[in-house]
Length: 390
Ligand SMILES: [Zn+2]
Image (tube, rainbow, N blue to C red; front, side):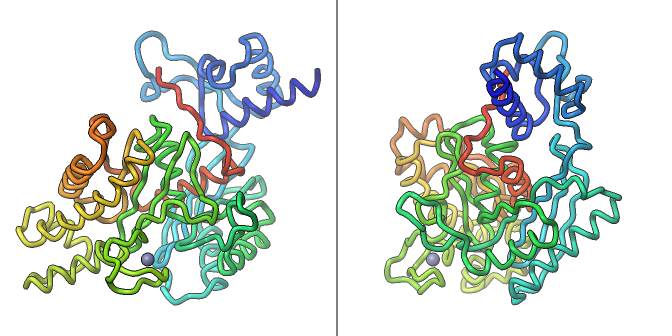
């Protein structure tokens, strides 16, 4: 009896950890527990200070009728840190178990810094944020860590999801030693996909493709509510689909990868070859938005290439949504429309008629937010929460 009760309590806490504040009615639907059991367990958790009741807020009021009180994990009970340790920028978010963000910050980092220096830079940013915002990290529960590139090495077994690569291991061990809590590590684009699937643009569908279109072109797949890692930890590496088999060699070992052809620096070069000088990626986006003919043409061509690669994935996965993030996503319809058109021309019409191609919700913070989501979930193979649709 006691064991059943504990299991029920754990199911309920898992929902609050991964979804955030929920009403009792929503919890009944999500956990499948009976009304009596659920009210009983929540009463107990409130008495023990593990969860707290929140008055309904106006913004949280969905639909007609009286908004209901929600329950959430006691924010003072635990802390989560999410880190996106990108190639050029570190972003850190400190959040509570109740999904409130306490502090956020980002800082540039030298491209050539090795694992130890990168880890130390992340630790310094966390410590500075903690001091600045007067946060008590004694209640730190877990850390999520996003890294660029192939975070996982070879798979240990055919069905395994890979072990961390040497550099990833060095960074995560240093951070783990400093804070003494579990560090969940994954590719930062894939974590951005997790953030979109948990709280962002694709939260309302069970199957989604996320693309981060920046200097690295990466992404992640949500398949039946789970973040797909793949047998070798490389699932979602859309930037390394070869689109020119005889093209330039890519650091991944392939040739003519999509990333080499559509990353902002390549597009700036293409503009230069056509006599147009573009200062940087932000300038590229601004001029595409302004409709400058040559810049628009270059961006449209790149988005069409991306759409063609996506069309193959759309046929296979039949996603409810494709979300585009990263620097180029700021160009909005100037990239979404050609992507949509290319998918429409190449994928099965029945699939694409109901497919939404949208801008990702989280900008540069997506990776760090996803790291928070991963740490909240701890076990990455757990399904994404099904969100209430009321
Ligand atoms: Zn490649």
